[in-house]
Amino acid sequence: MTTVLLVDDEPIVREVVARYLRREGFETIEAGDGDTARGLVETAQPSLVVLDVMMPGMDGLALCRWIRARSDLPERVPSCRIRGTKRPPRRVILRV
Image (cartoon, rainbow, N blue to C red; front, side, top):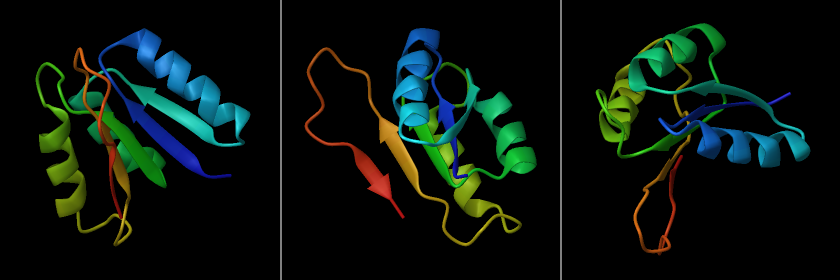
């Protein structure tokens, strides 16, 4: 089963996204901040990371840079960054 790590400081956002992903057959793990996510990346080695850009502490961009710099992770861990704004997003960034 493919594991997806959801990283967002808002629990309701994580809950809704996790529900959709589980319904489609994905296993989900969750983190409310960048530091917790770092630990989960190292221990669970997710296939995909969906992360919020704007979080307190380590933001999503810093976390994404850290994930990509890790030499012991698979060569390509896709990451999807969702930015919370008052406007609907014009795009979702998915890097593979």
